[in-house]
Length: 388
Image (tube, rainbow, N blue to C red; front, side, top):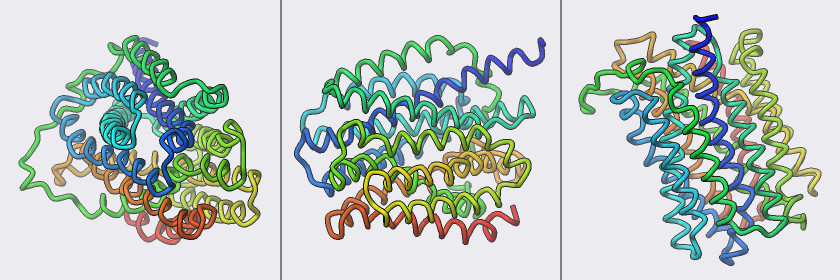
């Protein structure tokens, strides 16, 4: 019992930032239509604002991996979580399109810094405890996203201001991370000597894994960015009903990720990605063709089931590759940051592309882009992953 107790404490501590990260995103996505209506902006303008979140994400990814390698992931997780709470309040204070875009950049940077740090610490825990937890941690992220989506929908339906919601969320974040701050593994557990950037070559393995993740990231991002808008603007859903596609997506992600570690052991990651991508692509396409709020919910539910295990397995594999191949001169945290940066490139190009296409051909048919990418992921999974 004494041997497992420290790891149990750490698992609880690592779970908290995963829940926070998801809840913050879910709550934000639940209010996306309100940002659009409050500021009276078009789909394209909203897409640009969401692009600013993605730009901030890439800014955070640019330094978070090396900071985790230099200082250890634990202190970076704690500091980034406090910063995320502040950024949530800043977003809630915005009252113009320009300020919203600037606030979204800051928010995205804090979000991705915390993201890389918590995933890096999860990898350290897996290695130290000789267990597999990544999919479960991402399941906790999805539970947070589901909870945040419900909160955002309820607050929106009851016309609670975005600022009041943001302040409430920030207080919960600060209290939660403060309570578990001493339960992470020591910073020395994953500190690594850094070589000069000029001498660091990012191996192709991380490029290919990241590109595979891009297909999943665009699908995940589209569920939050456009699900509520599609339901409300195209199919005249009420504010709360318009959040149901994302809530169903998040619920499916929770179930898939909680069983993901066991499924990966039984069937292998390649089969999971192929079957999951097929479910996501075919299900979303069917939902869009059928139309209506029910069709949107079915499509988003299919995406949640299909994409649930892709990103956590890719992150875990990236960390394992870095640890098992010291000749690459890459810390696991840098590997996670690299794969995240490539995968989340989808968050950079996805929102404005879908927003522009939505204005040109209708948001309903613009959502066929994630369908195509899901099928592409299915076709590429075996050639990319079979030689890892």
